[in-house]
Image 1 (cartoon, rainbow, N blue to C red):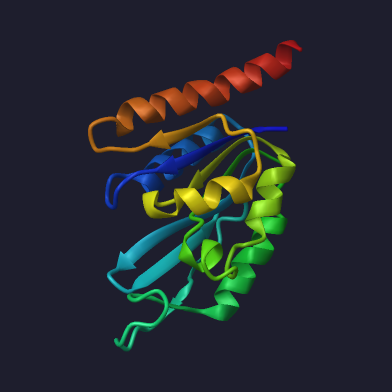
Image 2 (tube, rainbow, N blue to C red):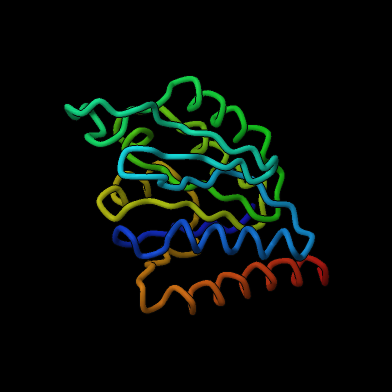
Length: 179
């Protein structure tokens, strides 16, 4: 079973950037990388990147205002299904990234909810899962996995945290090569 790290922190501290950088570093070292990265295109548009295939596409539809369950986003159901299916093909991997398990999954049981059993099964060496602070209490019991850590990202520590996670991935791989 692989190691699981929940990446959390306040908005705009660099959680997704940290995951993106670690994924790029792992790929540059010839490691297998799978999972999904989400990026905000603007205040109401999200785009996902499938790390194992490189496919990128919007996962939200144009926002018409008025709120809804996610207030600022209208999720594109077809894109969510496509990306959820991509998760099933992202493993096995040296590094598995799920950015993010948010309200869609943890409060509404939709979206990338399939990531939870994949994370429990552990067909990866290291997994990074982005979870916002307000949802940690919902994510932790659902993952049912012996966590390695909850990594709290701040503007002040994000570089050191990147170095630490990079070293951890290298250590996991080095340990497996010896054993």
